[in-house]
Image (cartoon, rainbow, N blue to C red; front, side, top):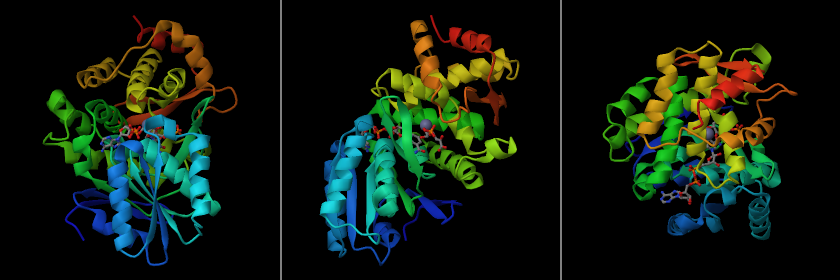
Length: 366
Ligand SMILES: NC(=O)c1ccc[n+]([C@@H]2O[C@H](COP(=O)([O-])OP(=O)(O)OC[C@H]3O[C@@H](n4cnc5c(N)ncnc54)[C@H](O)[C@@H]3O)[C@@H](O)[C@H]2O)c1
Ligand SMILES: O=C(O)C(=O)C[C@@H](O)[C@H](O)[C@H](O)COP(=O)(O)O
Ligand SMILES: [Zn+2]
């Protein structure tokens, strides 16, 4: 066993998120003795890594196949899903076989959904290679694809058997993608762990590099926020049943963020869209008299200091309103937003007056 940090997710079958270096030795153990065939799903950009893992698994006695999928959001489509199903079918995958994903959040979302749906569910292990994948997408069991109508509209909850976060992967990640992941890290700071904000604000420029002295701590803190939220409310049911916010807190900034992703035809990085989404809900909470000025202003300051976008086009508002109607938090015609009552005090604002939405959006436009 390597010298690495471990954060346990209290799922129905608890699993560890391992953070460290040279973690691949743990993969055969996570797959288990009953697995014979393994499909290694990887994006085009990580062909060499996908092939290397396949070869390691073959050396360890498994029958292993590499399945290459497109980079970024193009992977999260019904066509790519069907392609993966056909590869599994042709290779004779049974219920005792397994999927390994290696890639960013788009890969873990797609591969997780392949695992959830093949024969109604086979084992999956995620090896996230982006910051966003490590701190968010690979953890917690949300899997799925996009449709023309919106982001993540089709999916399933399907927990992994384990998550291996090898920090060396971050060294090859383009800056833009690293910064996109920081948006989810900052989100965890606002909703639950303000120390994250302090660490980022101590050196915003430094924070945009994996070499930053606090990178591992930022990753571990963000994963802990995710693990705690997921463990308390695995299937995102708490607020609809008790009125208290649970896992939905992790959707902070995502109502408008996902609408922007749809408007941009899924060409934007997820973190860039939710950065704007977080500024929007901060303005909404301020306009509703719920959030103090300093905390609302802090959103723009910290996100802008990382190079994330905080403004959007004024003429997009009617289209964004339409897209938000299909947000998964919406109930009937009632939009529901995650907002803050104070730093680290997330709550739900249900069916806000339209004038508040317009006022909040006006703060984002030129
Ligand atoms: N399931 C969840 O809980 C959850 C949480 C957050 C986000 N998401 C989803 O995650 C997705 C975004 O994930 P992402 O930001 O990781 O983007 P991504 O998966 O598109 O990866 C970004 C780009 O980097 C490439 N890449 C990946 N790892 C690399 C590496 N180590 N070196 C060089 N290139 C590499 C990829 O091929 C891709 O082109 C969105 O679809 C979002 O909806 C899901
Ligand atoms: O894990 C969750 O729960 C989240 O909401 C995490 C988000 O960062 C993530 O983008 C998630 O995929 C959004 O889920 P959705 O249910 O709004 O599609
Ligand atoms: Zn997200």
